[in-house]
Image (cartoon, rainbow, N blue to C red; front, side, top):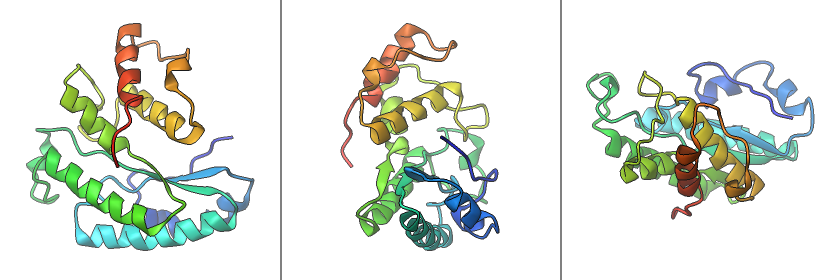
Length: 193
């Protein structure tokens, strides 16, 4: 069973404050609970501190219901997109944003020995460095395209199920067998953490 407890653009601290949080956590037995921070969580000390505080609350609550906490490492905004030109966000470039996400994720990861990190951001950067025609981003330069969503799903399958994605037969209709083979080869690469 899969379910979602989210609001568009909501930080983990905002979701923690929702009155129906405990009901959702206890409504059934969960194997995993995935925590995805708001995409700009690692771009300022204030956002990072709020995320760390919320993580502590969430991880303790997840442990109490007998589930395993999973951290969804986010990805940087698309290179050259308007996000890097807007002074409100204080983002230098894609590499710098990924470095901030990587370093902040490493801090979070060291705090919880039982935390499973799905390093989606690392794989997005690896895929783009390969320059194999990936189209991971939606038009807004932030959210995933259908290809990016599929890419992320394969990563979660790899990290949570532990099986090879090479054996999966299904793929989205808009992804050719050739493109699928490239995506699978990237996902099956073991990146250092």
